[in-house]
Length: 569
Image (cartoon, rainbow, N blue to C red; front, side, top):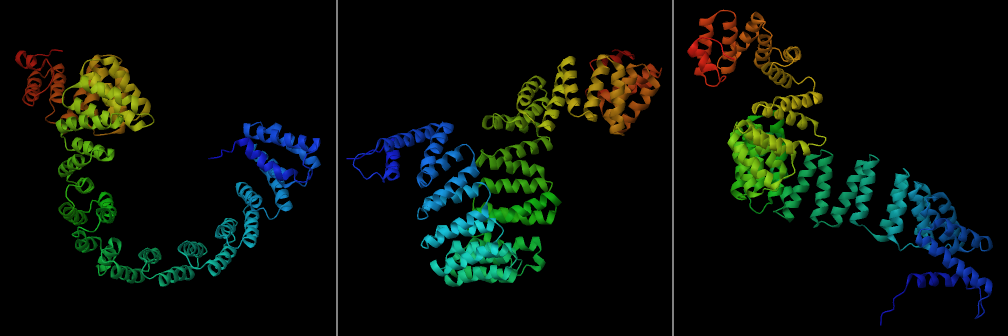
């Protein structure tokens, strides 16, 4: 039959030794009262009534100052109200009164640690280790607090005592090795690992510790010898095989090193992740430098991985990244799609895939891919933005607005993305002839970046088309040209604002600059024709209208202008 001990029974068990001095079978009334108060104080402490518990414990200690258990319980209650120094003082009394009770000492050590008194904590555990020499834990804590107290030399002596008492162990060797590294004694740090390897010569993990240390110290020859020893024990060890493969690579040349890895990469029994770890720094280097020769070497190894470990998303993603950063974005699109087909759960791959579609002008692919991405990641603002961009560029401004409004709700503190969303919203609303909403979106974008030339250009063009606040339109278009001089879009917009202000000669100058840079832009050609017509150059105007018509696009009045030889607006 199982006996269940209640919380109250546990308190009573603690109580029994407190009043053991009552030798009579029957306790005195005073003893009974003290027991009742003790129980009441503990109940208050358990219930969180700390002030009442402290008052009762302090009253009991007036008559029983030498009672270690009462001092201990009062210390615990002080700790509960963050009176840590008072708790230390109280439990120190308990530990002095009953030095053989290690739990009082351990609690004192915990309080010293909590208050950052590391030297005092070290002293506590030194005494505990002396009293309980069989306990490794006390030695470890003694050394730990010495290290925290910046007494590494004393901590090393503690570890020496432990090694004589308990023998060599990986944990002890690691700690000694780390301390020697910390104080800059690299020879002794090396010796600790060498001793461990010599004691356990078949333990590959210890050999790797030593090889890693040599790598850290840039002692390549010593590291190589250790890796060779590892391969003698385990010829299939991936890290050692890769390290040895680098031997003989002239000057550690990146391309030659990658070529040397082919012998390891063709082995199916070498883990894929271990191989990819080797490639990641070089893919990053391609991203940083665009080095085509290095990219080719990386791609060669990735092709080997695709053959040895087929249909792995991480291989396809690595291949896509390498193509992307080396400039072949069309192939990057293909391989990002393959990676997603194998594993659609990685958001970063989706985003890079969509960006690659955008940068290669694959708007239909971007639209389809962003729709699929939203099925997997329905709460990502960037995907909604790219989806809206795809809709806008495929002629569906209404759907674009829907996606962009969703993106706005998710951008949070991503202000650069929020700016892009507002700008595109302005363009989309302008497309469906909602000028007020368009202007409001442009204004929000300019609040985030007042010097965004592209937004200043688009907003001023909107105002010019509407004929509203042409002074503001002129100011913004002028500012855009100051920020981005020789920008044909900004030049055309400024010229068109001047046209609406009936400053035709100045308009011809500005739109003429845009024509030189955009000789096939229909709207620019048409507007230049409009300016010429207003200046009385009808034949030249018709010529530019015809050029605009041949290039497609233009306003709804373009064909009437050509047919009738006069201006319509």
